[in-house]
Image 1 (cartoon, rainbow, N blue to C red):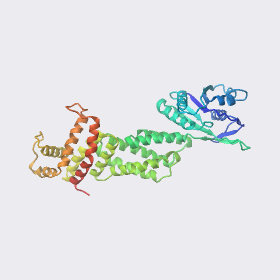
Image 2 (cartoon, rainbow, N blue to C red; image 1 turned 90 degrees about the vertical axis):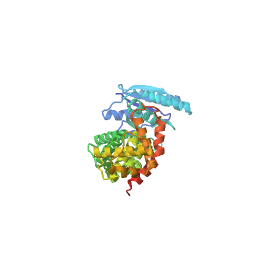
Image 3 (cartoon, one colour; image 1 turned 30 degrees about the vertical axis):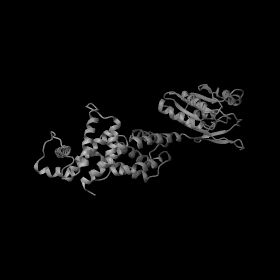
Image 4 (cartoon, helix red, strand yellow; image 1 turned 120 degrees about the horizontal axis):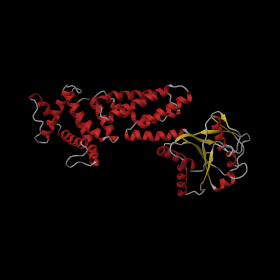
Length: 419
């Protein structure tokens, strides 16, 4: 692991300043880069390499010559010095060249310290994007992003170095929240929350109440997402209720800045989770199906739709939804009725005399039976990985479900008859 300081060198004339970061003061210097190296040494952490991005003007004014930055850096023999010439032109090709230059400095598993004090115009944004790109593609770690305050007009030049590393956290929020909202995958968000918790606990040497609730929220979200992704219908109500309770707990606690983006995320997911936590298994199941297909989980959607109809038959006729024999009975009723509705002879045969009324009741919902016939057939297509005659394309399987769902939902609730 190599710790690299990447920095922009400016063109101005700088006076000696007293820079300070997190209560530690650097030795007086004209250059914030030297101050950062000194501050790291004072906290017993070494900078292994410094990579200076400099234009022709910056090289002439502040790099080469007596008492310029290059000469000052030579007093740190353990720091390897690298200068990277960049253009002062302002056009899109130059911007992409700079992006490549910064990205190529960062190598796999590097620890990155980025100083943007003398970056210009678009360069701070480009620095953040380059870091984000390298974190994803090269697994680099960000040790710090710093901006040294400087004002040539003040007489006493005591300036803070502002730690902007929290903007990296914001990028993580954007990435992981987007993945959660669009795909339902919570692993990245859960892992990020846990990592932030570890970092905060190490800094403060103690746990705090908001960390407890955020940790519980991440855990319960993970359990609910896993139940949905693996079609654990019997676990949905319990896991959704726990996730709902965790949301309420987080909403009622004062969050530290690192976790405040949770509030925006909660606005997007609370209503969905609340619907899945409905005490009525039919309404809970419908919400779960909606969640799955909106997040691209079509195999789960097809399977849940068939099983929810079987659950509805059981509930309507006072059978046990979690009893194997009762569910087989309801499955036979459903399959037989679908065959009759399709006017075909199937292997399911006739039902018992006492069940004929149940079949006749189901046949009143012809559109629902037609949809269930398609859903069951498509589910088999998916579950057998398309190894059948005339398999459907993935696009058609998705389009079928989307086009059928609203009618399925309306007809199922009409059949169920409650509320």
